[in-house]
Image (cartoon, rainbow, N blue to C red; front, top):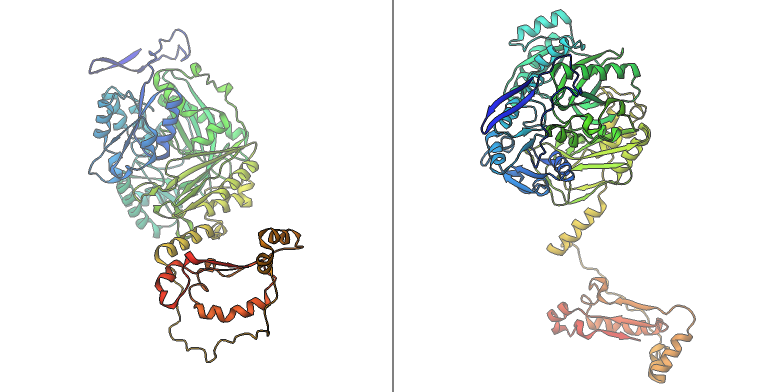
Length: 631
């Protein structure tokens, strides 16, 4: 049966409740009305906003960007058809979390759908509900599903109800250190604290002994409180050295759910993903079947619609454990798109419009794996300084491109200002090829082509990962980075061209800075004038010109065998070292020697300098206008 909610202007269809007797794709099931989306706002920033804008443009949908005061110059606002300031006077991150401002911009500008991207409000049930209450479609799961999946304890209970294996852990958030002690007594160490109302590695701490328990509990609570506004934690048995495998799912409003296979996200640093691979390398086919079927089972259990990700840990024995559902688009969705040829953002928008997966040609039997894709997150972090984020202006930017390379970026361009206020992601580089080793080769080549000056990046570290034999063999787990310290033996960047440009610019603006010796003693010897033979100098080309005129001179030049040389010692191409710093009477002293010993030269140039000539007229030096060429 249809469920309705009273909203301004009439009734709004919320969903369909179906009996098990009628399958979702049955013609007897009444379908929701298809309503095209005409204008989409992305309540986010950076590369994910641009990713969604591009998909909308391809579908003929008008786009709206929102930006904070600190993001005035960011590219995502320029890629949209319209852009509006939000969160005036608020802190940089808080601006993108200010739901009233976002809803106000949407309602005042005819927005009929909002895409949350990832991060910020993407997994906030109250934001999805606020969009729905304002009569705006939320491109994502329903508010109720977002709420259930955002609460890790409830998501865990749903997984258990669906028969999906979970890691042993608490059924509800713990409220004291004593409860953590009791859990440790039951299951032993190691254990892990996790934030109950957020992810991304914040509020996550591994504990190996009783001595570490109190400190890690306090730190995890503080991190969770600062990041999510709620310090609630739950405790799980820590699975040592697992693989982190996640399955991409896609559902519609009619109960259809399918998977788009898995990604391996095991290469992590402090629980933050660094490199993602699709499909997972060397994954047992039976394990793949269990992971994908459990993901679809869990999604159907909760009535999931739109795109999402079910995440698992796989231990060394091949057993898998559910850890969480991300009810949004993932940063690494790109590798799934590359191997399945499914545009996930297109699919998200069409599902929000009311179309079914079969309408879109998306049936499980038609989804195939095509080759391998690898994504590297290029960030403005310095691996040599514990990945400390770097800020500043990008002075030079040149990307790696070519066959099999996809770039998703927003801030990666010359002149871009990298702010300390937001995530340090600069550009996502995705390589796609027939297999894992070939994709790794393409990625390595693309990263080598990058030139980023002005801020530090993690590219040298990523290159080490891609050249690591363990990575190339596909034998990685979540401890890969910790157990390979050689990844931090970074090759220093040479940056020769940029250093030369800096030096030349400095000299042009500030003048030369060559130190002048001030304490040296004068030479005890006068310069030695070379001995000059007695008599007139030998004849040369000048004599031919005087005796035979221009025609005879030209004939002599043509008949000459070999090179004709011009001496430019005395011209100011030598930065005036001779022409302005050697007086005329000094040049006259050396002239007889030159005449006798270099008579076969084609010509000798002697130029004075205009500036020096103006300053030294009392010395009768030649200004530039009186340059001489002596034959």
